[in-house]
Image 1 (cartoon, rainbow, N blue to C red):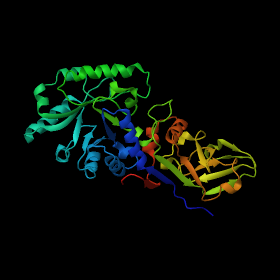
Image 2 (image 1 turned 45 degrees about the horizontal axis):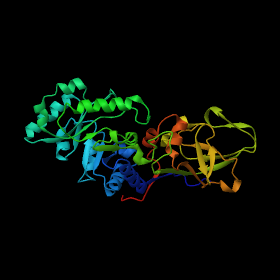
Image 3 (image 1 turned 60 degrees about the horizontal axis):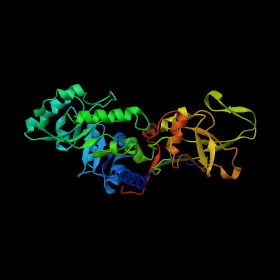
Length: 363
């Protein structure tokens, strides 16, 4: 008889708050902002933002204007920066006090016109391109900026973004820092921000006034190849639906990619790629049952995956036994490595079908 089929995604808000404090200790002379775009990397922007606010965070970054408007309903007294800049309809964003990150000259002109129509300086951040070739003013565009235009704005931040911060020895890190300094010299004095999660660990020269903590807040290792300095945040568990006792030679799942011999024992779990558990992890990822690592057997399907539990005693695995699919200090990174991707993608793909359980923090 099948057990209850709901997987549980546990999100430790206390650990997120602790990770904010850890980043603060790494960059004690800078303010740590929280990047909560994409629904706080899939973990729940409202719950995460409240926990971080309770820990002392007052600077938040989102990607889109509608994310910022929703966050303002939760946080009345925080600065909310919108990375993708000025929404097409500026009025709601201005009313909510959102701070657009201006990325190109046309956007700057639009926002300056908005400020002049309103007869007051509006808060803004300016993104300069220091070498990522993705968003931000080029040096030539900065040189062409009319200084009287900037007088119409309350310039809260000048920022850029590092391309290779997770590779501590990459020469582009220092090149970008030097370009950032040259760009800042073309602008009025304003607080500066260059470091993302991994950039915070590059040293004080990269910290400036504001560091943008993102994936590190959620437990992904910002220092690949070294021990994870962050507390684990996410645990994903799911009940075994049935245990299959193999009585003849065969193979598991779609494509018959995992041979099974007589005597093997296989546990079927109700999680698949429709839940965000990446199919690319097939045949490579591991799970844990009763503290023992067990391999994925065969391909991840839409709603199910199979674990080879042959190494466990029969009485330790039965319908209803919980399997841990993500957990521990490096759980997100381990699954990401098995799927050939990064922890960011693992987090943001975790789906809505899980029962979500928040622990700790102030949710």
